[in-house]
Image (cartoon, rainbow, N blue to C red; front, side, top):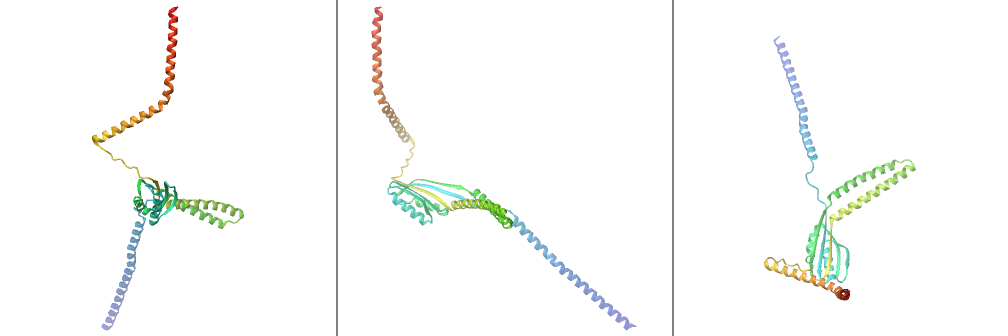
Length: 286
């Protein structure tokens, strides 16, 4: 009996050990299964964070599209030589000559230079040997809105052309083909027009225009401003001389009329007096 009881107890222990092992394995499996799920949550959170960052608006302002132009007037004795030096200067800076007109006493040339070399060219123009700068003017025009608008219209027009091409491929009759081809031609023409405008704007932004005029002679001297009593005295003296000059001009203009009018007026007065003298004695005698 004791042996049988011992055998049953041993079997019971083995069964309990198997159950406990199975439960532990199932728990481990559950934990293994739960681990990936727990690991996937952070991945989802990181992806969500990345998407949120991608959706944030870009705070960087767009590059401004500026069209820069300048006008420079030079004075010098040798106009032809100055023009040659100006053209050599723009060639060294990577630009080119757009238009040129010249005579023996004056000349003008239109320069197209890269926008990042415009300041260097303007500085070089002020140092052209044998010339002095009489006037210089620079301007900048912001065309950013125009460029953005044309870019958007280009994208819309390209999409429109693509849609019409799809319709053309699906056309079944000759009439449909003719109508769709006419519409496609019109939209392609509008697209090319927009593209030319866009290229022109971008070209003006990339290449600055400098108009240089050269005249023979020295630049007019800039008068120095004088302050105080001596300056006021000099200004008053010049004003007096100017007033006298104007008065002499008026007298000179009126003198020919006076030469003719005054004798005629004197004769008319004398004639009137004679008539008065003749009439007076006759009246007294009566």
